[in-house]
Amino acid sequence: MTNPEDPKTAESIYDFTVKDIKGNDVPLANYKGHVCLIVNVASKCGLTSSNYEALNELYEKYGESQGLKILAFPCNQFGHQEAGTNDEICEFVSKKNVKFDLFDKINVNGNDAHPLWKYLKYKQSGSLGDFIKWNFTKFIVDKEGHVVERHGPTTNPKDIKSLEKYF
Image (tube, rainbow, N blue to C red; front, side, top):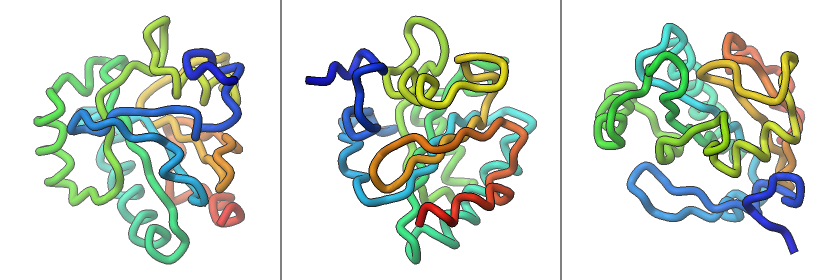
């Protein structure tokens, strides 16, 4: 039996439940059979415009045709660049024409990091260690729910050419 609080016992992202931006529980098992791009986002980062634009483009290109799901998790741990409430975040992303899935604001580092993010980091640690360095760190999850790649904040989502091989 897996314990969703312990990333070392989880078999896939499907073992986790997260809250969407409106506070509803979302079992990640709902994403079975889809390639997922999971990313921590912020509204007031120097990388915000380029990343939101690229994420939107990827979603437009592959969301319908290939079943790509983008799961965006607001996080305020880096330079307090996502200080707003969930309602303010919703207002911000509506101006960016975001159509992909947005979740509750979470922590990605530290003892109170969300269990999903502990799992992502456990499965794909970064080049400098088992932590998220900044906003817009991206994880690719295959159709079986396994974390297969990690890309840093400065990697533009459109430049992740390997994404296509998971479809």
